[in-house]
Amino acid sequence: MNDTADTREEMASVIDDEDWQRTVEDILEDGPHSTELGKMMGRDAVRVSIGEMSEQAFHEKYHDAVLEEFGVDERPTGSEGSDE
Image: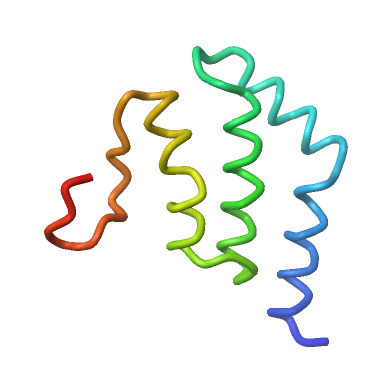
């Protein structure tokens, strides 16, 4: 296995680690927004970073939830000419 595959495997294992889960919950529960949404987006952000999910799929998956949670989705992801 090469370094890239090792790194991807290591990062993928982190998202299901119980200590990681507790740390994320501790950080997010102090904020005013959804801890569960933050955890789900964090897991999928790792998946994007290791190539298991495309950026487009990530943004499509969370667009409605981000709008509901924040009232606006200002993430720099829309194509030019997009009104969202």
